[in-house]
Image 1 (cartoon, rainbow, N blue to C red):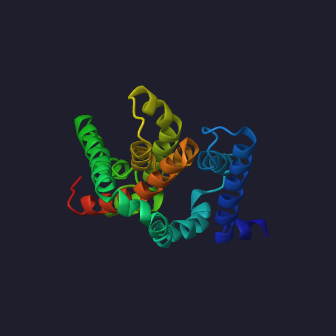
Image 2: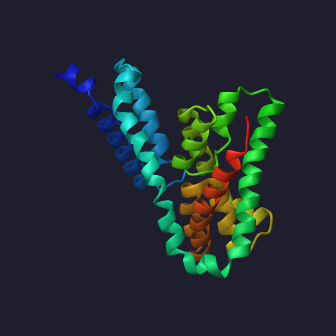
Image 3: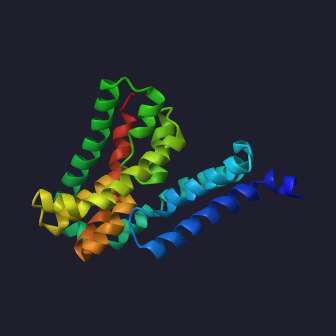
Length: 228
């Protein structure tokens, strides 16, 4: 009975959902940015597999179902842009220029650093879209031969870093314009940073939400012409 469950896709799905909900409960209890449910869920998942010596292949059968869902989920980014269409229309040029600058800086800085330190091409491809939201980042990484797991990890690290540092950087560099604060946060740290942007203010949250979708589309276009 247990062996049959561990060998079925339901095991990977149940473990992924269960550990994420556990991470979410811990985050609600602790109320700290570092207590990210994705990171906590991943840590508990690894712990369960290691402690009970469950082969990764068993877990992957269910996890692959979640990976498959990442593609359709990307379409939901259009909803965020549509909901903020009035703001986007009003500030179209600043948003476009800011998102192009953010996407280019993120991608080309990674390529330059990886080349300077002689990083493997597969790892470079996985790190390149770190500032995109997970569905887009994984798709870009895989299209260039990158590893999806590393791409997802880099996205989580970028998101947590942005969520922690966005208010601090705004203060250090004297950025007081709420539109600039929101665009920068969304362009660099996607959904996790947007949660912090919304705490900073309504305008910051709206601009950060727009930046997620716009930067994602720009990153996809740039990646079409990139070679790792």
